[in-house]
Image 1 (cartoon, rainbow, N blue to C red):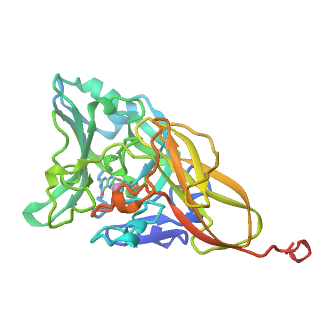
Image 2: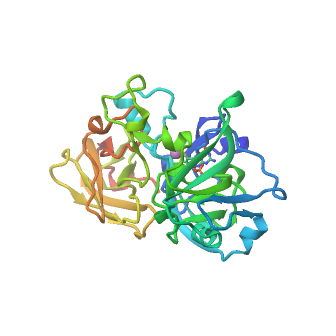
Image 3: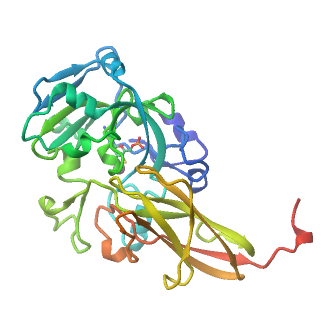
Length: 370
Ligand SMILES: Nc1nc2c(c(=O)[nH]1)N[C@H]1C(S)=C(S)[C@@H](COP(=O)(O)O)O[C@H]1N2
Ligand SMILES: [Mo]
């Protein structure tokens, strides 16, 4: 695990537990993020798993509780799904810049990555167990332990049963054709496409079908959204909006803040993503604070995955400020002002990304290198 911190293009936010994101430049290299550059978000040390004694239990509101070995899982029909995971804390650095948040990882725009996941459908396992009437949520538990002394507990979270039955939700044991790395949940993790990353529980050990959402700390307290005037002292945890589906979001990755570009045709690039089973429909940029917008060209758009966007522009020498916004298939778009969605946990920042950059004087053709 620690050797991953040595990858030159990985920004390590925290060594223990290990939290890291690729550089902006690396993020846009390929639509599928290489496994060794995939962002890592851990709340506790990576648990060691004994594959022989490992069992996944399926309990709760089911006709027939199951105890599945890894071989039992491997025997089920295998399928692959392309899905982008995004942490609810993605783009928190901008939230900090506006107003500081205490004790949270200061993610840049790279707490997001895309992979082709291989595994079995959660629905196949639920069918084998037989879901009983009254069931509405599927709660997952990981093997990693948090807390101290007799207050120890495992990481967990839940998704609605309706989502759990969708064909895109996987119990994944492969990532981009390779066995899942310990850092990303070996031997088995949930992949809940369209939902915040926290719901894709790693080192999965238990699936519980139940009437209510998970009572785990990371569902019942953390990963909730509060209004800007609420803080850690005034918060009533029961009142927060429990996060599930991702909202529509985008990032400007090229140019980077403060960069100087040669005048002439230049490119502005980034990614866009949305949640649920919605798709990104349009991305646009503005150089005048949002009065006039230029539509970007999108890479292939598919549900559950980000898309990359590009705008080619001819800009005059001087300082420019570019903002962007994405629109999805439900006509949702991003809010302009971070202040209005600021929350003390720094979640779900999908305010317009803003990048200030300089365009230098034109480089004369005869002075151009090469
Ligand atoms: N068991 C377990 N699962 C977990 C976590 C964790 O700390 N423990 N972190 C969650 C969060 S907050 C995110 S954003 C994703 C990140 O997945 P990755 O580390 O593979 O990128 O895993 C989720 N699953
Ligand atoms: Mo996360």
